[in-house]
Image (cartoon, rainbow, N blue to C red; front, side):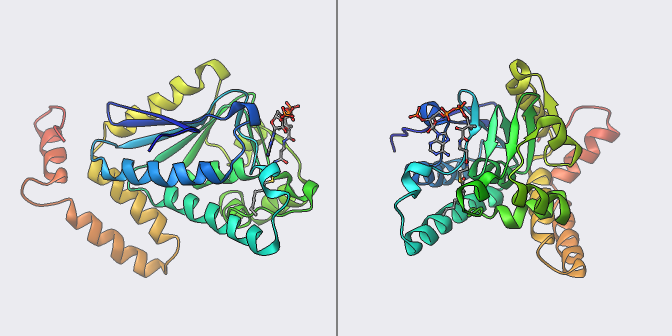
Length: 257
Ligand code: CO8
């Protein structure tokens, strides 16, 4: 597929994906969702990919869903657009590898929803984040009403969603919406440093952590424990990743994954 909006490159197990539609502040349109679905499927098939970093080109990470595309939609078309975005963002959440959002600027509306579908977020100290949908007489439609309270708690989520307040990167860090800040010119370097750190760990263990944590959130605690015990066991045995990691420790050498 010829990508018009998404740029991507894969180096040393890290897929760097850039939303590149800067003339519209990377606003999310139907083409974006088609391209992202296609690219995610290709990255999942590629066993070399251990971590993905997602960022935006220009002064925005993503300034929201494309208002120009949405304005004429009927109720049914609006729901369809919402479903399309929800499905794509769910696919990001379900990738076997961790996905890091590197928030380089505005992350508004659908843009913050996209960042929230990633596993964690690093932001430029100049980034601005918010859910301004109510300014447009809308609500978030890409699962923002579901993910935001899970990430920052009920009251912080309702505050952001109902006031449409745009918050600074520092405030986002304070409420746990982002996990780390970096100077704007060092953001990508820092995101890649963290991606390389994760890529250096036991690859199967990293995948099983993502799967255990994400699946565990949606099931009973005891069922989550069962899942964890099953995954834990799968890392043991002859020629297993766990065997190599533990032997390497005891033999005082780096592991060979
Ligand atoms: N959609 C379409 N175009 C956009 C968007 C957007 N979300 N954001 C910016 N643009 C365009 C502008 O129209 C402008 O285009 P042009 O040059 O042709 O006039 C260009 O990008 C540059 O933008 P500005 O000139 O406005 O740049 P500023 O630096 O002055 O302002 C802002 C930056 C503050 C980010 C401003 O652009 C803005 O407020 N953007 C809209 C932010 C917003 O409201 N986002 C939420 C959108 S709604 C949403 O995301 C709902 C998600 C769920 C959808 C569910 C499906 C049904």
